Length: 411
Image (cartoon, rainbow, N blue to C red):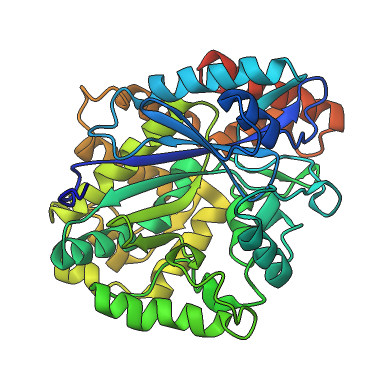
């Protein structure tokens, strides 16, 4: 049955990806197929519905995705719904000596040795990705993210939403970075997931572009300029057109005209749904304020230069909340009225005070993240500069406990 499309901010789609690990040592456990089969009671399961929340597989066999089962009318209360499903999954995995581990990357996974693609109906798609891009690397098989889907009803709403999201993207990792450790050691960067994501499609660089999407503001322009470029570049590698779909576009935000939404894909997953939904609230309210022209006018947002936005994004990817933003044009787009340069953390503090009402259930969690830094900074402080494997395991055990106990990681 056909439904009228939702207008801006009339619905929200949230997707949370979690890795499955052995409970005793936290090494990767490729148990997603067994988990989904057990939940559904039939073999070969790829999707499980639990009322407002659904579970599904991802590219690799050690990751399970939880998502809203269709658009949710509001963000408030979704953290509790996700947590109930996390708890059910934990019970099913406990019977197999496993548990869920949050965070945007596994800290010591060796993708070349441990990657197993998810078997089943979508294997042709996964095998094609693997053949072209070699998915046994961090940017493919070792990354867990939070996606936010925001609807639009027509071309005008798409243009306003796409312009706003492009402006918002560069500072999102200052809230969401959760990946300071890779290959068993701190790297000095806060968002290693995005650092590797940037180049994971290097065999066909048009697939991810500059991560910040190009300034196109109508469906016709998006399909004829952006998507057509992706499809042309893929064609020599994929003459059968297996990947000729909107989801093959790997930019940090992608248009999904099949669902009339833009999907923001740039967020690392946090330690528990409470934190993820708080971050999502901050992101949504920033995009809403931009769409409503409370921070800057729509014309100025459309004119934002992709290279300048990308430069700020990679500064924030590396340094998170402590990244210094000294682009006066960008600061003006976000309504900043302070000194000519500020940190991303200072900018978020300024924005949250103005765009997230004090009565919002997420406000308290956002204030904690502001005061203590993003999860990546808290993890980096906990492990120090040269942790042993045992020390890493101890910190990530605590992180896993945070998911099970629905609490923030506050060492």
